[in-house]
Length: 422
Ligand code: HEM
Image 1: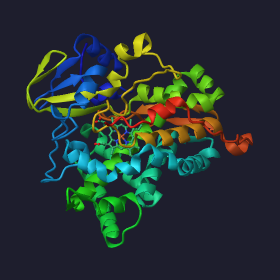
Image 2: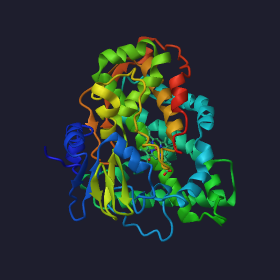
Image 3: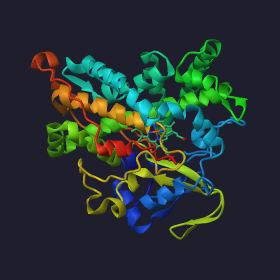
């Protein structure tokens, strides 16, 4: 089996499950070469990934969680995602209370209104691109609300994140760096506004925060801003668009889901998270000589956790690991991370967004179907459709606008809402 987890071609139609499956079975801690760099360990089993993610003392998030080493010189500053405890714990504490389950649940009515508005905008057209016209708008609007900036700016900032994640070969030289600079220019203006006049949004909270007695500065603010715009944008978008792509490919299960959204949507969303796994990997760096599954890892070597592979591991998901089962329970997927200190901060908000938009899509657009093949992003880091064109009966033509049904909270949803970061 040819293994190449660095080629965008391997991800041209979604995650390379043929390669992952071979690796899990034959070489679960696989030494992967890396052109012009040292190489890395590709870790593909669920248990190993959980163990690595939960041991930041051995497997550090510094200098980077991406495979290439970061070449941006930020002095003493570092994005929370790329730090380890105790610095990480202190930074996370600055924003953590804005992301707890209770706050996420409190955002539900507002998020449902946004979902209705997004579908209103496309309902009459009879056709749209689910990625750009629907799925991408939701996280952009939500993070814009949280930062207290206009929705259009949220959308523009989010489009920059795509350039940040795209493979260098697939775009103009320097495009990713240019996008980061544009993002920082915008963040600078927000910083100045909130420093001059505090408000009650997330931007003000960060702009006036102290960590270990020291005020955060402009660079800290910019890094938080970039992280929060970035982390919630194309991940949530890809889950919604990738989830719809999956449902279209499984019409019998789609019909089963639509029959009783109220009780079936919660487990279905978890299964779509497992199936799509929008974050392909996170990297760590070994701090000492150690072993994973008996394989010696030397201090300084890169260790890369492939979540999409872990989420198809038969050791956890049994003989149906490669089968989509919208009713799967329990569903111990690790699409939001394996439960260490960096466990996705936005998981609760993401679930509320995903529920709201899928419910609108599945109840309001009649005869919804794909129009042509799905185009995938050419990224080895974030997986999802780049374009997913669909058709449906326009609302005015069908004269139908089924009442939105409330999806009741279920024990599964409650259990999944528990913060697994500790
Ligand atoms: C389907 C949607 C999402 C997926 C699949 C996802 C996945 C992930 C993953 C895999 C990690 C790294 C976990 C680890 O290293 O252990 C992460 C971290 C993070 N996510 Fe998400 N995420 C999603 C949505 C969101 C949203 C909506 C937000 C914010 C509004 C968000 C904010 C963050 C932040 C800030 C971190 C870094 C946490 C830290 O370093 O402590 N994510 N996410």
